[in-house]
Amino acid sequence: MPLNYSKWDNLELSDDSDIEEHPNVDKKSMIRWKQRDIHEKREARKLQIAKYKSELELNSVLRPRIQSIIKGLSEKGLDHYRSVQRRVKEQPSDEKPNTGSPNQPTYDQMIAQLLSDVYRESAFIVDGAQLTKDGVVLDKEGKIINGTSEHKVPSWAEERDVPEQKKRGLEIALEERLGWHIKELDKRDGVVKVELEKEEKEQAKKITSEGIHDGWSHSTVNKAKPSPLDDKPKIPKKKETTETIEVLNPKSAESSSTKLAEEDDEEEDFGPLTPSARAFANIPLGAFEKSFAFIQKDSSVLTEATHDSLLAEAFDAERRGDKELCKRCVHQSLLINYCRQLGRDGVGLFFQKMITRNPKSIEMFLQDFNQTHHRIVQRTAEMIAEEAAAGEREQIQLVAEDPSMEIGFNLPDGPPPEDLRLEGEGTEEMDIEQVKAFLQRKWDIYQGFNENFRNALKTEKLDEVNKLLGKMKVAEAEEVVELLQEGGMLSFSERGVRDMTSGQAQ
Image 1 (cartoon, helix red, strand yellow):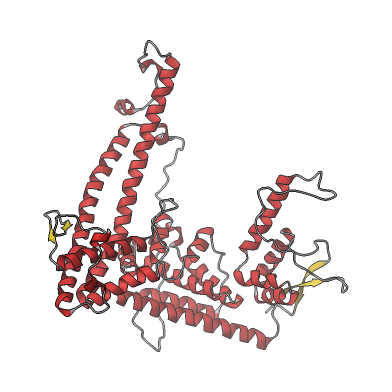
Image 2 (cartoon, one colour):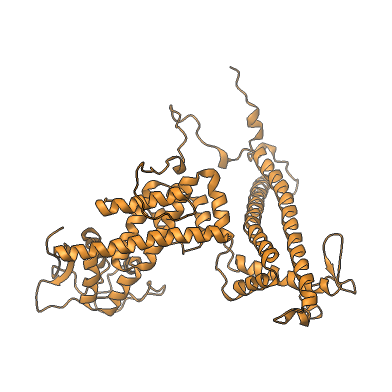
Protein backbone atom coordinates (compact mmCIF):
# COMPACT_ATOMS: atom_id res chain seq x y z
CA MET A 1 0.00 0.00 0.00
CA PRO A 2 1.54 3.39 -0.96
CA LEU A 3 2.18 5.77 1.94
CA ASN A 4 0.57 9.20 2.01
CA TYR A 5 3.14 11.88 2.79
CA SER A 6 0.87 14.85 2.08
CA LYS A 7 -0.02 15.33 5.76
CA TRP A 8 3.53 16.42 6.48
CA ASP A 9 2.89 19.48 4.30
CA ASN A 10 0.95 20.91 7.26
CA LEU A 11 3.81 20.73 9.75
CA GLU A 12 4.49 24.15 11.28
CA LEU A 13 8.21 24.15 11.96
CA SER A 14 10.69 26.94 12.54
CA ASP A 15 13.08 26.09 9.70
CA ASP A 16 16.08 28.43 9.75
CA SER A 17 16.49 28.08 5.99
CA ASP A 18 13.05 29.62 5.37
CA ILE A 19 13.92 32.90 7.11
CA GLU A 20 14.35 35.83 4.76
CA GLU A 21 17.12 37.96 6.15
CA HIS A 22 17.11 41.76 6.36
CA PRO A 23 20.38 43.48 5.50
CA ASN A 24 20.34 45.50 8.76
CA VAL A 25 19.26 42.62 11.07
CA ASP A 26 21.31 39.56 11.93
CA LYS A 27 19.89 36.14 11.06
CA LYS A 28 19.60 34.90 14.66
CA SER A 29 17.37 37.83 15.61
CA MET A 30 15.19 37.26 12.56
CA ILE A 31 14.79 33.59 13.52
CA ARG A 32 13.79 34.48 17.09
CA TRP A 33 11.27 37.07 15.86
CA LYS A 34 9.77 34.58 13.43
CA GLN A 35 9.46 31.92 16.14
CA ARG A 36 7.88 34.39 18.55
CA ASP A 37 5.41 35.51 15.88
CA ILE A 38 4.34 31.89 15.26
CA HIS A 39 3.81 31.20 18.97
CA GLU A 40 1.97 34.47 19.61
CA LYS A 41 -0.47 33.85 16.77
CA ARG A 42 -1.02 30.27 17.94
CA GLU A 43 -1.73 31.39 21.54
CA ALA A 44 -4.02 34.18 20.33
CA ARG A 45 -6.03 31.65 18.33
CA LYS A 46 -6.28 29.35 21.37
CA LEU A 47 -7.56 32.22 23.53
CA GLN A 48 -10.09 33.21 20.88
CA ILE A 49 -11.39 29.63 20.63
CA ALA A 50 -11.68 29.43 24.42
CA LYS A 51 -13.52 32.77 24.44
CA TYR A 52 -16.02 31.58 21.83
CA LYS A 53 -16.67 28.34 23.72
CA SER A 54 -17.09 30.24 27.00
CA GLU A 55 -19.62 32.58 25.38
CA LEU A 56 -21.65 29.67 23.99
CA GLU A 57 -21.62 27.99 27.41
CA LEU A 58 -22.75 31.21 29.11
CA ASN A 59 -25.63 31.67 26.66
CA SER A 60 -26.70 28.05 27.17
CA VAL A 61 -27.12 28.82 30.90
CA LEU A 62 -28.84 32.20 30.51
CA ARG A 63 -31.26 31.15 27.74
CA PRO A 64 -33.35 28.64 29.78
CA ARG A 65 -33.51 31.09 32.69
CA ILE A 66 -34.88 33.86 30.49
CA GLN A 67 -37.33 31.41 28.89
CA SER A 68 -38.50 30.39 32.35
CA ILE A 69 -39.15 34.06 33.25
CA ILE A 70 -41.10 34.54 30.01
CA LYS A 71 -43.24 31.51 30.81
CA GLY A 72 -43.89 32.71 34.36
CA LEU A 73 -44.74 36.19 33.11
CA SER A 74 -47.19 34.75 30.57
CA GLU A 75 -48.89 32.54 33.18
CA LYS A 76 -48.75 34.68 36.33
CA GLY A 77 -48.32 38.22 35.06
CA LEU A 78 -46.32 41.16 36.39
CA ASP A 79 -46.17 39.84 39.97
CA HIS A 80 -44.01 36.92 38.83
CA TYR A 81 -41.57 39.23 37.02
CA ARG A 82 -41.18 41.43 40.08
CA SER A 83 -40.76 38.44 42.39
CA VAL A 84 -37.87 37.17 40.24
CA GLN A 85 -36.31 40.63 40.37
CA ARG A 86 -36.52 40.63 44.18
CA ARG A 87 -35.07 37.13 44.48
CA VAL A 88 -31.97 37.76 42.33
CA LYS A 89 -31.39 41.04 44.19
CA GLU A 90 -32.05 39.97 47.79
CA GLN A 91 -31.05 36.29 47.63
CA PRO A 92 -28.55 36.03 44.78
CA SER A 93 -26.77 32.78 44.01
CA ASP A 94 -22.96 32.85 43.91
CA GLU A 95 -22.82 30.67 40.78
CA LYS A 96 -20.91 32.24 37.92
CA PRO A 97 -19.06 31.27 34.72
CA ASN A 98 -15.70 29.64 35.33
CA THR A 99 -13.59 32.31 33.62
CA GLY A 100 -11.04 32.78 36.40
CA SER A 101 -11.60 36.55 36.39
CA PRO A 102 -11.84 38.05 39.93
CA ASN A 103 -14.52 40.50 38.78
CA GLN A 104 -16.62 37.93 36.90
CA PRO A 105 -20.33 38.71 37.58
CA THR A 106 -22.57 35.86 38.69
CA TYR A 107 -25.46 34.51 36.62
CA ASP A 108 -27.95 36.19 38.95
CA GLN A 109 -26.17 39.54 38.61
CA MET A 110 -26.42 39.30 34.82
CA ILE A 111 -30.10 38.31 35.02
CA ALA A 112 -30.78 41.16 37.48
CA GLN A 113 -29.20 43.71 35.11
CA LEU A 114 -31.16 42.35 32.16
CA LEU A 115 -34.48 42.43 34.03
CA SER A 116 -33.81 46.00 35.18
CA ASP A 117 -33.00 47.18 31.63
CA VAL A 118 -35.98 45.37 30.14
CA TYR A 119 -38.35 46.81 32.76
CA ARG A 120 -37.14 50.37 32.03
CA GLU A 121 -37.46 49.90 28.26
CA SER A 122 -40.93 48.35 28.57
CA ALA A 123 -42.19 51.20 30.77
CA PHE A 124 -41.01 53.73 28.16
CA ILE A 125 -42.67 51.66 25.41
CA VAL A 126 -45.97 51.88 27.32
CA ASP A 127 -45.47 55.67 27.47
CA GLY A 128 -45.00 55.87 23.69
CA ALA A 129 -41.30 55.11 23.03
CA GLN A 130 -40.46 53.88 19.54
CA LEU A 131 -38.78 50.66 18.37
CA THR A 132 -36.30 50.59 15.51
CA LYS A 133 -36.19 47.78 12.94
CA ASP A 134 -33.32 46.27 14.91
CA GLY A 135 -35.40 46.22 18.11
CA VAL A 136 -33.64 49.17 19.82
CA VAL A 137 -35.90 51.33 22.05
CA LEU A 138 -35.75 55.12 21.41
CA ASP A 139 -37.25 57.93 23.45
CA LYS A 140 -39.33 60.71 21.90
CA GLU A 141 -36.15 62.60 20.96
CA GLY A 142 -34.69 59.58 19.18
CA LYS A 143 -32.13 58.76 21.88
CA ILE A 144 -31.49 55.15 22.93
CA ILE A 145 -33.12 54.30 26.28
CA ASN A 146 -30.41 53.63 28.89
CA GLY A 147 -29.87 53.88 32.63
CA THR A 148 -28.90 57.57 32.75
CA SER A 149 -30.75 60.16 34.82
CA GLU A 150 -32.84 61.27 31.83
CA HIS A 151 -34.11 57.69 31.34
CA LYS A 152 -35.13 56.74 34.85
CA VAL A 153 -38.05 54.35 35.20
CA PRO A 154 -41.32 56.34 35.06
CA SER A 155 -42.78 56.97 38.52
CA TRP A 156 -45.98 55.01 37.81
CA ALA A 157 -43.92 51.89 37.02
CA GLU A 158 -42.13 52.07 40.39
CA GLU A 159 -45.34 52.03 42.39
CA ARG A 160 -46.22 48.90 44.31
CA ASP A 161 -49.51 48.60 42.44
CA VAL A 162 -49.09 49.56 38.79
CA PRO A 163 -52.18 51.34 37.43
CA GLU A 164 -54.55 48.84 35.80
CA GLN A 165 -54.75 50.83 32.55
CA LYS A 166 -51.00 50.38 32.07
CA LYS A 167 -50.39 47.03 33.74
CA ARG A 168 -51.47 44.81 30.81
CA GLY A 169 -49.50 46.88 28.32
CA LEU A 170 -46.43 46.61 30.53
CA GLU A 171 -46.78 42.81 30.72
CA ILE A 172 -47.01 42.56 26.92
CA ALA A 173 -43.98 44.84 26.47
CA LEU A 174 -41.94 42.85 29.00
CA GLU A 175 -42.72 39.58 27.27
CA GLU A 176 -41.83 40.99 23.85
CA ARG A 177 -38.56 42.53 25.06
CA LEU A 178 -37.45 39.28 26.73
CA GLY A 179 -38.37 37.42 23.54
CA TRP A 180 -36.25 39.88 21.56
CA HIS A 181 -33.27 39.16 23.82
CA ILE A 182 -33.74 35.41 23.26
CA LYS A 183 -33.62 36.02 19.49
CA GLU A 184 -30.48 38.12 19.92
CA LEU A 185 -28.86 35.30 21.90
CA ASP A 186 -29.73 32.82 19.15
CA LYS A 187 -28.41 35.20 16.50
CA ARG A 188 -25.17 35.72 18.44
CA ASP A 189 -24.75 31.97 18.93
CA GLY A 190 -25.00 31.49 15.19
CA VAL A 191 -22.25 34.07 14.55
CA VAL A 192 -20.01 32.63 17.29
CA LYS A 193 -20.40 29.06 16.00
CA VAL A 194 -19.34 30.15 12.51
CA GLU A 195 -16.32 32.02 13.86
CA LEU A 196 -15.43 29.12 16.17
CA GLU A 197 -15.55 26.65 13.30
CA LYS A 198 -13.36 28.97 11.23
CA GLU A 199 -10.76 29.28 14.01
CA GLU A 200 -10.73 25.54 14.69
CA LYS A 201 -10.25 24.80 10.98
CA GLU A 202 -7.39 27.28 10.88
CA GLN A 203 -5.87 25.66 13.96
CA ALA A 204 -6.18 22.20 12.41
CA LYS A 205 -4.39 23.26 9.23
CA LYS A 206 -1.04 23.12 10.97
CA ILE A 207 0.43 20.15 12.82
CA THR A 208 2.30 21.44 15.87
CA SER A 209 4.34 19.71 18.55
CA GLU A 210 1.26 19.78 20.79
CA GLY A 211 -0.58 17.44 18.48
CA ILE A 212 2.26 14.95 17.95
CA HIS A 213 2.01 11.61 19.76
CA ASP A 214 3.30 8.07 19.37
CA GLY A 215 0.79 6.10 17.37
CA TRP A 216 2.75 2.85 17.08
CA SER A 217 4.43 2.48 20.46
CA HIS A 218 2.09 -0.40 21.37
CA SER A 219 1.36 -3.58 19.49
CA THR A 220 -2.22 -3.83 20.75
CA VAL A 221 -5.28 -1.69 20.17
CA ASN A 222 -7.03 -0.64 23.35
CA LYS A 223 -10.79 -0.86 23.42
CA ALA A 224 -12.74 2.32 24.12
CA LYS A 225 -13.39 2.79 27.82
CA PRO A 226 -17.07 2.17 28.51
CA SER A 227 -19.13 5.04 29.85
CA PRO A 228 -20.21 4.77 33.49
CA LEU A 229 -23.76 5.11 32.18
CA ASP A 230 -23.43 1.79 30.34
CA ASP A 231 -23.41 0.02 33.70
CA LYS A 232 -27.09 0.21 34.57
CA PRO A 233 -28.18 -0.19 38.21
CA LYS A 234 -29.71 -3.56 38.97
CA ILE A 235 -33.44 -3.43 39.58
CA PRO A 236 -34.83 -6.19 41.83
CA LYS A 237 -37.50 -8.45 40.37
CA LYS A 238 -39.54 -8.60 43.56
CA LYS A 239 -40.19 -5.84 46.02
CA GLU A 240 -42.93 -5.41 48.58
CA THR A 241 -44.38 -1.93 48.94
CA THR A 242 -47.12 -0.61 51.18
CA GLU A 243 -47.30 2.93 49.82
CA THR A 244 -46.93 4.31 46.28
CA ILE A 245 -45.46 7.79 45.84
CA GLU A 246 -45.07 9.44 42.46
CA VAL A 247 -41.43 10.42 41.96
CA LEU A 248 -39.42 12.06 39.22
CA ASN A 249 -37.79 8.79 38.24
CA PRO A 250 -39.57 5.64 39.51
CA LYS A 251 -36.66 3.32 38.72
CA SER A 252 -34.29 5.57 40.66
CA ALA A 253 -36.57 5.50 43.69
CA GLU A 254 -36.75 1.70 43.48
CA SER A 255 -32.97 1.43 43.33
CA SER A 256 -32.43 3.82 46.26
CA SER A 257 -35.09 2.11 48.38
CA THR A 258 -33.59 -1.27 47.57
CA LYS A 259 -30.15 -0.12 48.75
CA LEU A 260 -31.66 1.11 52.00
CA ALA A 261 -33.57 -2.14 52.46
CA GLU A 262 -30.33 -4.07 52.03
CA GLU A 263 -28.78 -1.96 54.80
CA ASP A 264 -31.50 -3.22 57.15
CA ASP A 265 -30.58 -6.85 56.58
CA GLU A 266 -26.82 -6.70 56.13
CA GLU A 267 -24.21 -3.99 56.58
CA GLU A 268 -22.05 -3.94 53.45
CA ASP A 269 -18.48 -2.72 53.52
CA PHE A 270 -18.52 -0.10 50.77
CA GLY A 271 -15.27 1.44 49.58
CA PRO A 272 -14.27 4.95 50.71
CA LEU A 273 -15.26 7.95 48.63
CA THR A 274 -12.83 8.77 45.85
CA PRO A 275 -11.49 12.38 45.71
CA SER A 276 -13.89 13.08 42.81
CA ALA A 277 -16.84 11.61 44.70
CA ARG A 278 -15.98 13.62 47.82
CA ALA A 279 -15.77 16.82 45.77
CA PHE A 280 -19.12 15.93 44.19
CA ALA A 281 -20.59 15.39 47.68
CA ASN A 282 -19.48 18.87 48.75
CA ILE A 283 -21.67 20.61 46.15
CA PRO A 284 -24.46 22.49 48.01
CA LEU A 285 -28.05 21.23 47.99
CA GLY A 286 -30.01 22.44 44.98
CA ALA A 287 -26.94 23.67 43.08
CA PHE A 288 -27.93 21.72 39.98
CA GLU A 289 -25.84 23.93 37.65
CA LYS A 290 -22.68 23.01 39.59
CA SER A 291 -23.58 19.32 39.66
CA PHE A 292 -24.23 19.29 35.90
CA ALA A 293 -20.97 21.13 35.18
CA PHE A 294 -19.07 18.70 37.44
CA ILE A 295 -20.55 15.64 35.66
CA GLN A 296 -19.73 17.13 32.25
CA LYS A 297 -16.08 17.50 33.29
CA ASP A 298 -15.77 14.28 35.29
CA SER A 299 -18.26 11.51 34.52
CA SER A 300 -16.34 9.02 36.69
CA VAL A 301 -18.80 9.71 39.53
CA LEU A 302 -21.66 8.17 37.52
CA THR A 303 -20.96 4.66 38.78
CA GLU A 304 -22.90 2.30 41.01
CA ALA A 305 -19.90 2.16 43.38
CA THR A 306 -19.98 5.96 43.86
CA HIS A 307 -23.74 5.84 44.47
CA ASP A 308 -23.31 3.12 47.09
CA SER A 309 -20.37 4.88 48.77
CA LEU A 310 -22.34 8.13 48.98
CA LEU A 311 -25.20 6.34 50.74
CA ALA A 312 -22.74 4.65 53.10
CA GLU A 313 -21.12 8.03 53.79
CA ALA A 314 -24.60 9.46 54.48
CA PHE A 315 -25.11 6.81 57.19
CA ASP A 316 -21.69 7.53 58.72
CA ALA A 317 -22.24 11.31 58.61
CA GLU A 318 -25.64 10.95 60.32
CA ARG A 319 -24.05 8.79 63.01
CA ARG A 320 -21.33 11.40 63.59
CA GLY A 321 -23.92 14.16 63.77
CA ASP A 322 -22.84 15.82 60.52
CA LYS A 323 -26.39 16.47 59.31
CA GLU A 324 -25.45 18.68 56.35
CA LEU A 325 -23.00 16.16 54.87
CA CYS A 326 -25.63 13.43 55.24
CA LYS A 327 -28.13 15.50 53.25
CA ARG A 328 -25.59 16.36 50.55
CA CYS A 329 -24.60 12.70 50.12
CA VAL A 330 -28.25 11.64 49.76
CA HIS A 331 -28.91 14.51 47.33
CA GLN A 332 -25.92 13.70 45.11
CA SER A 333 -26.52 9.92 45.22
CA LEU A 334 -30.03 10.52 43.86
CA LEU A 335 -28.65 12.67 41.04
CA ILE A 336 -26.25 9.87 40.10
CA ASN A 337 -29.08 7.32 40.08
CA TYR A 338 -31.27 9.52 37.88
CA CYS A 339 -28.42 10.01 35.41
CA ARG A 340 -27.70 6.28 35.27
CA GLN A 341 -31.35 5.42 34.74
CA LEU A 342 -32.02 8.09 32.12
CA GLY A 343 -28.84 7.36 30.15
CA ARG A 344 -26.74 9.80 28.13
CA ASP A 345 -29.65 11.18 26.12
CA GLY A 346 -31.74 12.00 29.17
CA VAL A 347 -29.15 13.61 31.47
CA GLY A 348 -29.16 17.01 29.76
CA LEU A 349 -32.96 17.20 29.68
CA PHE A 350 -33.21 16.21 33.34
CA PHE A 351 -30.75 18.88 34.47
CA GLN A 352 -32.39 21.49 32.24
CA LYS A 353 -35.66 20.94 34.10
CA MET A 354 -33.91 21.12 37.47
CA ILE A 355 -31.84 24.21 36.59
CA THR A 356 -34.90 26.09 35.30
CA ARG A 357 -36.74 25.05 38.48
CA ASN A 358 -39.59 23.26 36.75
CA PRO A 359 -42.15 23.17 39.61
CA LYS A 360 -43.33 19.60 39.07
CA SER A 361 -39.82 18.22 38.60
CA ILE A 362 -38.48 20.02 41.69
CA GLU A 363 -41.45 18.85 43.78
CA MET A 364 -40.98 15.23 42.76
CA PHE A 365 -37.22 15.32 43.33
CA LEU A 366 -37.63 16.83 46.80
CA GLN A 367 -40.24 14.21 47.62
CA ASP A 368 -37.81 11.46 46.67
CA PHE A 369 -34.97 13.18 48.56
CA ASN A 370 -36.99 13.67 51.74
CA GLN A 371 -38.18 10.06 51.67
CA THR A 372 -34.64 8.67 51.27
CA HIS A 373 -33.10 11.04 53.85
CA HIS A 374 -35.81 10.28 56.40
CA ARG A 375 -35.20 6.56 55.98
CA ILE A 376 -31.46 6.98 56.61
CA VAL A 377 -32.05 9.12 59.71
CA GLN A 378 -34.59 6.63 61.02
CA ARG A 379 -32.42 3.58 60.32
CA THR A 380 -29.33 5.23 61.90
CA ALA A 381 -31.28 5.93 65.08
CA GLU A 382 -32.48 2.32 65.12
CA MET A 383 -28.93 0.99 64.68
CA ILE A 384 -27.60 3.16 67.52
CA ALA A 385 -30.44 2.00 69.76
CA GLU A 386 -29.75 -1.64 68.87
CA GLU A 387 -26.08 -1.24 69.71
CA ALA A 388 -26.91 0.43 73.01
CA ALA A 389 -29.31 -2.39 73.90
CA ALA A 390 -26.76 -5.08 73.00
CA GLY A 391 -23.96 -3.45 74.96
CA GLU A 392 -21.16 -1.06 74.15
CA ARG A 393 -19.62 -1.43 70.76
CA GLU A 394 -15.88 -1.29 70.10
CA GLN A 395 -14.63 2.26 70.17
CA ILE A 396 -11.43 4.27 70.29
CA GLN A 397 -10.74 6.61 73.21
CA LEU A 398 -7.79 8.84 74.14
CA VAL A 399 -6.49 7.86 77.61
CA ALA A 400 -3.22 8.82 79.33
CA GLU A 401 -1.13 5.88 80.54
CA ASP A 402 0.06 7.84 83.56
CA PRO A 403 -2.95 8.89 85.70
CA SER A 404 -1.02 11.96 86.82
CA MET A 405 -0.76 13.25 83.28
CA GLU A 406 -3.39 15.18 81.36
CA ILE A 407 -3.95 15.21 77.64
CA GLY A 408 -4.10 18.65 76.07
CA PHE A 409 -4.49 19.92 72.53
CA ASN A 410 -2.17 22.15 70.54
CA LEU A 411 -4.33 23.52 67.72
CA PRO A 412 -3.09 25.68 64.81
CA ASP A 413 -4.39 29.23 64.38
CA GLY A 414 -3.84 29.18 60.63
CA PRO A 415 -1.28 28.41 57.93
CA PRO A 416 2.35 29.42 58.56
CA PRO A 417 3.12 33.11 57.86
CA GLU A 418 5.35 34.02 54.93
CA ASP A 419 7.81 35.86 57.20
CA LEU A 420 8.12 33.02 59.73
CA ARG A 421 10.98 33.54 62.19
CA LEU A 422 12.54 30.98 64.52
CA GLU A 423 13.62 32.30 67.91
CA GLY A 424 14.83 30.73 71.12
CA GLU A 425 17.38 28.18 72.16
CA GLY A 426 17.87 25.24 69.79
CA THR A 427 16.36 26.96 66.74
CA GLU A 428 19.70 27.85 65.15
CA GLU A 429 20.07 24.49 63.38
CA MET A 430 16.41 24.19 62.31
CA ASP A 431 15.56 24.37 58.61
CA ILE A 432 12.90 27.07 58.31
CA GLU A 433 11.46 25.48 55.15
CA GLN A 434 10.96 22.16 56.95
CA VAL A 435 9.28 23.99 59.83
CA LYS A 436 6.98 25.76 57.38
CA ALA A 437 6.14 22.47 55.70
CA PHE A 438 5.29 20.90 59.08
CA LEU A 439 3.09 23.85 60.10
CA GLN A 440 1.34 23.79 56.74
CA ARG A 441 0.73 20.04 57.04
CA LYS A 442 -0.61 20.60 60.55
CA TRP A 443 -3.05 23.21 59.26
CA ASP A 444 -4.13 21.00 56.35
CA ILE A 445 -4.81 18.09 58.73
CA TYR A 446 -6.85 20.32 61.03
CA GLN A 447 -8.88 21.74 58.14
CA GLY A 448 -9.50 18.19 56.88
CA PHE A 449 -11.50 17.29 60.00
CA ASN A 450 -15.26 17.82 59.76
CA GLU A 451 -16.75 20.88 61.44
CA ASN A 452 -18.19 18.97 64.43
CA PHE A 453 -14.81 17.44 65.29
CA ARG A 454 -13.03 20.80 64.90
CA ASN A 455 -15.55 22.36 67.29
CA ALA A 456 -14.89 19.56 69.78
CA LEU A 457 -11.13 20.17 69.53
CA LYS A 458 -11.63 23.90 70.09
CA THR A 459 -13.23 23.18 73.47
CA GLU A 460 -9.91 21.52 74.45
CA LYS A 461 -11.94 19.11 76.56
CA LEU A 462 -10.91 15.45 76.30
CA ASP A 463 -14.46 14.25 77.03
CA GLU A 464 -15.88 16.18 74.08
CA VAL A 465 -13.26 14.76 71.71
CA ASN A 466 -13.71 11.21 73.03
CA LYS A 467 -17.47 11.54 72.64
CA LEU A 468 -17.10 12.06 68.87
CA LEU A 469 -14.34 9.45 68.57
CA GLY A 470 -16.71 6.96 70.19
CA LYS A 471 -19.32 7.57 67.49
CA MET A 472 -16.87 6.78 64.70
CA LYS A 473 -16.02 3.40 63.27
CA VAL A 474 -12.84 1.96 64.77
CA ALA A 475 -10.80 2.32 61.56
CA GLU A 476 -11.91 5.93 61.10
CA ALA A 477 -11.22 6.85 64.73
CA GLU A 478 -7.76 5.24 64.55
CA GLU A 479 -6.98 7.30 61.45
CA VAL A 480 -8.12 10.50 63.20
CA VAL A 481 -5.90 9.77 66.24
CA GLU A 482 -2.92 9.11 63.94
CA LEU A 483 -3.53 12.43 62.17
CA LEU A 484 -3.70 14.25 65.52
CA GLN A 485 -0.34 12.75 66.44
CA GLU A 486 1.17 13.45 63.02
CA GLY A 487 0.11 17.11 63.24
CA GLY A 488 1.45 17.46 66.81
CA MET A 489 -2.00 18.50 68.03
CA LEU A 490 -1.75 16.37 71.18
CA SER A 491 0.19 18.00 73.99
CA PHE A 492 2.75 15.16 74.03
CA SER A 493 3.74 12.59 71.45
CA GLU A 494 5.65 9.91 73.39
CA ARG A 495 4.02 6.74 74.63
CA GLY A 496 1.94 8.63 77.11
CA VAL A 497 -1.10 8.39 74.85
CA ARG A 498 -2.57 5.20 73.56
CA ASP A 499 -5.81 3.99 71.94
CA MET A 500 -7.98 2.11 74.44
CA THR A 501 -10.61 -0.30 73.15
CA SER A 502 -13.60 -0.63 75.47
CA GLY A 503 -16.35 -3.23 75.15
CA GLN A 504 -16.56 -6.06 72.69
CA ALA A 505 -16.95 -5.76 68.93
CA GLN A 506 -20.48 -6.37 67.78
